[in-house]
Length: 196
Image 1 (tube, rainbow, N blue to C red):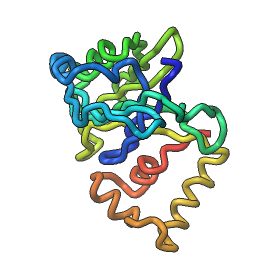
Image 2: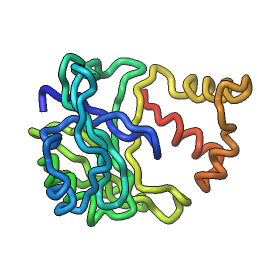
Image 3: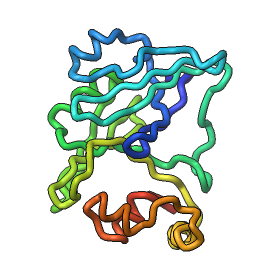
């Protein structure tokens, strides 16, 4: 996996890429494991190769195989990707798909009323997470979500609120919350998943 960049699906319709040796898997192989190749692998000039697929629960993700563009390398700094997780309606189908396709080992943590959280690991290191979408989440489709590292969570939320007030946030937070079946506060957290 060293030649590949890692990231994931931030929200429905917005994809970054998840690196793996999976790039050349055939459509038939993906289908056999319950997924769907949505775009056959293609070259992005000399930067690399990419494809787009969906897991059995419908969570869409991208794959990137580096050429001249390695992808994201900086970690642990404000503004960088901090964590990625698949939020799924069907853990029983999605979890084995990722284990088989990416070779992930798993570690499961009981979160009490929040259910269980699965950590995907590669070579003993955390790589991504999986959580089953609860009925209290509203109408949230299976998706990949990213969390960005920030120096100040409250400050990041304040910036989103300021962007809404000045018109730079193209959809008002109240409308986003309504579409998500969430409260305004929940919508802010979903849009701005940030962690200090």
